[in-house]
Image (tube, rainbow, N blue to C red; front, side, top):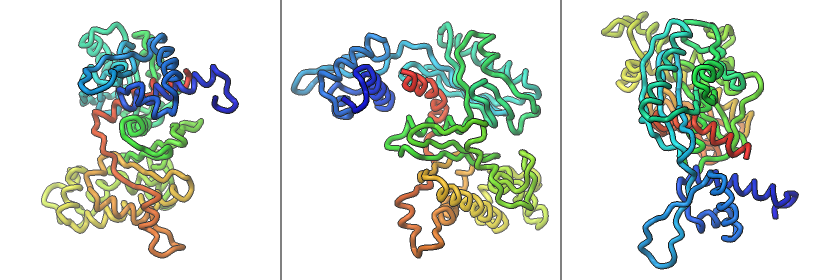
Length: 397
């Protein structure tokens, strides 16, 4: 028995581990589970039967062609309320529906929107819910929402959504519960990225950080395999660390935040300004998009390269401060910034992994600290927000 735990506590602990492994590996045999958990077959059998009785786990037969007895495989049950996963920004809503195995039963889709008022955004969400109910024939969904911007996850409220045409909060949880009687979980979209990395990639460390570098810069980090959120909706706001006190005014009201230098919006704005000043762009500089910026960068345009190198350096210095302050040594980067490729990433790493007190330590530090691009596609990343329900199931078991 685990020291300090009674039989009930031990069963709960081992049941959680079984569910966690089944969500991560999809299907496992009894012997595979016993090996991973270091439990005897009789002890594991009791736990599996307990979870089967609760209709959380199911046994499935498999075709057996080798020697020995076939005992089948175990997986989480499919027959639970489906999860409608939504990623909501002021200009796009991405959608999928997942079953109990966290497999899609409605394929990933993305809808371009242009709401001018919160009511229009809410109406779009309601329409998506009704459409997915119609497609699946389900009577009800659980809803998992990844919201861009500042989020009060307890109230289920979008507190502030940058780039939206309004400043009012939106009480998504209350509105969906009232309209459909649905269970609703809400969190920031960087949490969606972190949960996707945690559950959908192999061999992730227990401590890591996901940073989304897009028109803003946000982050979410796991400490001891748990999302760290803080109490005031502000954890992960690396984009609002001040880099230059005399810099540009940020949307948060302060000056010189990292977002004003290293986000794709800031980089695009600076490239437009530099090309307008130097008159060296064939088109209209004000129409340059970040996609155009990436093209100019890869083609060797010096104005663009200088701008991006400066931004990458500032971002790398911020990561350096992050790495020396916290023990999170695995940094995963998502967002449109990945268009700039590994040249941008190498500049970031040269700053983030620099040690002024030791010679030639970058290679050594890279063995201990990793700064890399995330590789999950958007369709898989959206599944991440659905794991809010899985984490709640396991934590509260």
